[in-house]
Image 1 (tube, helix red, strand yellow):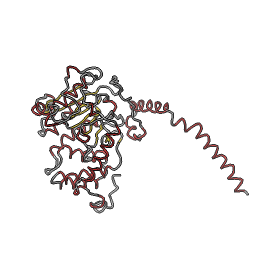
Image 2 (tube, one colour; image 1 turned 30 degrees about the vertical axis):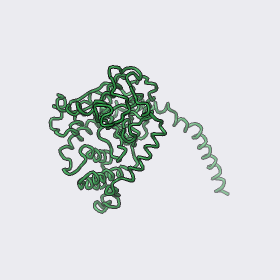
Image 3 (tube, rainbow, N blue to C red; image 1 turned 135 degrees about the vertical axis):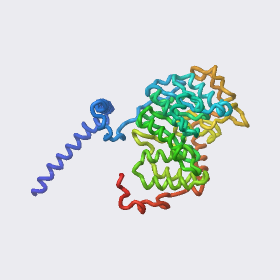
Image 4 (cartoon, rainbow, N blue to C red; image 1 turned 45 degrees about the vertical axis):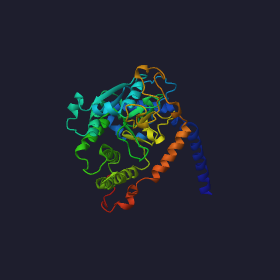
Length: 397
């Protein structure tokens, strides 16, 4: 009887506490106003004790919402100054990228973004900052680091990347929980190196400079150039403690002799990164076809309202070698401005989101089926896991 008389009041008290928590405390935890309070606390902490911020769980932060552009409305500069950065070599620009660049110029005439067209061979700032770099792709990332200081955010674009659907703002794709945003290429799951979004921060500048410096320590075999380097650079950056996994992937990388065996390295990195897509304060990787750019050939240059930019337009003229582009003819940039002025779309190329989804689903199945056999690796089964590091494998976790 003593036990029962003791527990009944205790159970009643616990029930009352749960009721109070659910009715009064829990709702306040979800109140947006509390996030504003937290943000004010963070700002004060930045000034008084910035070191403590390193201990805050960045996963609690929220992405700043940006309203999607509708009917070619204005693009409010919610994230500050944005630079569109296009690095090029003059000889290639004159012979390959007119269609892509005309579409980009037409888009920019209807916005307030700043564009930097950087000649990698003749730009003074690049010559001073990147004189050691001889390979084009690595020099590009060094050049991006040199120009990053002029912006709050920068969109680095390949010269063969054009705008297919101007009814988007660049800000729609900025995730301010991180400093750098990449995306996966659709046909092979490789993290793309040509187009990325980057914040002006110490982390970003260091990342770009280190990426450029990989020119001098990259493997001498078939290595994927700056694209291959990027896979390893990201893995080392976001999972520095995954020593054995990094070593295993590096082994695949150094053993590559062609594209097919190189893809084994890409697979290894993808499996090592796992399902995680965002590392707060560092990097986010958009899923295939969910970023600001995708390869146009995947859908024969058909597009829907959710598309923005297409990669892979290497032609000076619409219709070159039978290419049926999304435009009737080359865009006349002088006609571009507000709204859809100057945009001469080939109407049959615009389709519904459902139709694009079906096309992507078919290509996804096909690309998976045709993925190189030699690249279908399972590193945790085929490479050491603890055999080379026991008993110290977890020392860095």
